Image 1 (cartoon, one colour):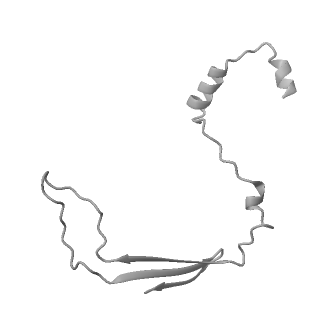
Image 2: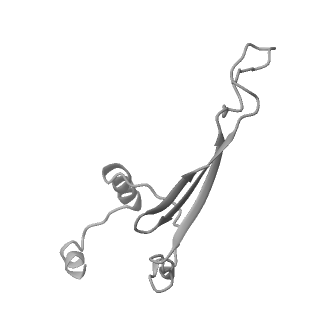
Length: 105
């Protein structure tokens, strides 16, 4: 840094020129920083090697979007096989290395 400063001691660059170069030539944008503590990714603090993560999700066969298009003055109506359907649940367990189990109920 010092050698470059000495070689180009008479060079003056405006702040706006640097900003435009970074924005246009380097395709960068200026954003708010998100600060993450170093300890967050420290393997001594987080030991995920011995963890199993379990999650479940439920859905039914009649899932439709809650809104739809219709002519002005008329309600938006759609047809489904039934108004009440059997719910299905997917239960999964994974570790950091592989899928432990998946169950469809």
